[in-house]
Image (cartoon, rainbow, N blue to C red; front, side):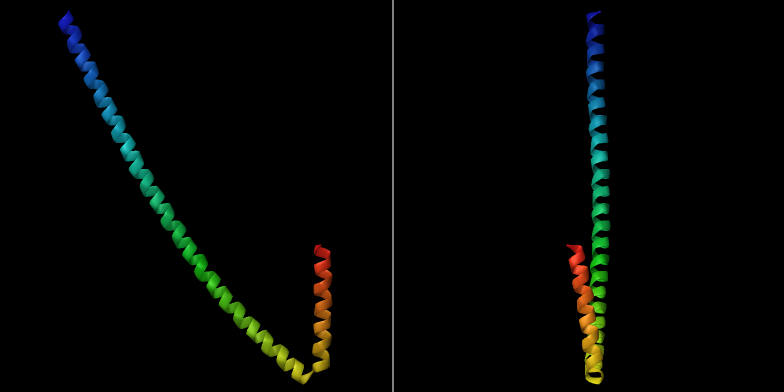
Length: 104
């Protein structure tokens, strides 16, 4: 009977060690999967950031072109029709000031 208890205790102890090993293996597998998921997420975030950066650079370039064209149009208008240009500038200033005050 005592021998039977020793065999059962050894068996139970061995089973607990196997269970602990299986849990450790599952934890390691889960950690590896989580690490891969994090790496994929970081990769996607970097790709998105790169795309946004590229698009914002393109938008800034286009804005610069539009402003250059606008400046050329203003200069041409000022040379050919100075009175009209001054009147339009005053009107634009008035509207800008009115909207500025409404925002306060």
